[in-house]
Length: 235
Image 1 (cartoon, rainbow, N blue to C red):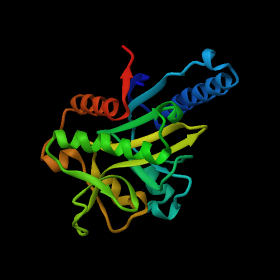
Image 2: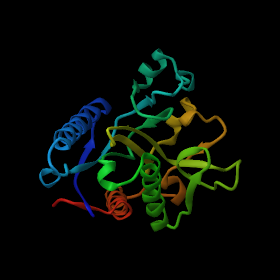
Image 3: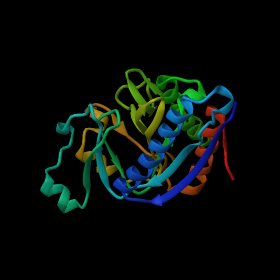
Image 4: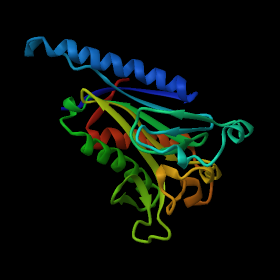
């Protein structure tokens, strides 16, 4: 059964504004689900999920299980560089968000999709892997780490192109992924990305040698997400 979905592209949006936006949607889906749970089967309604795309101004975010030691700048240095720092309730460690990066926030009811959280993360990764395949880039998963990676067979060259950190409650998801398209990778020099000190980061621009059309990449990624999750977008 296809899951009906609302798609929203917020464009350049502050991290906290986007968090508040998805939190409201998340709460509405959970509340509607709880209300529907007490109804007879023939009266239950499926609440529409949402997929949110956006870009953020420069910000480092830390997952609830992450270590602040992986942030290599002081408060004064961050102020001087005009970058903020936010502790979040998602999984994962520290990462960077900024211009040229597609940040995706899926608010999905996994019980409707009939998948668990592990499968959900797997399908998010698959959506990005398929998008990279469109650009003739071979990507894969890395054992012991979430996200999408390149050259996983070569330890000295392995590098991440998409980070994933999610939250789930009552089988409803929020937070999501950060896909480096035209991202300024120098910002990753001031953190241990996702807590790793022995792995690199990359972007679509770096791999292909030129800036990419963000709208084109978004369109391909949006289509791949619909395909792998069996979704249909509302017009």
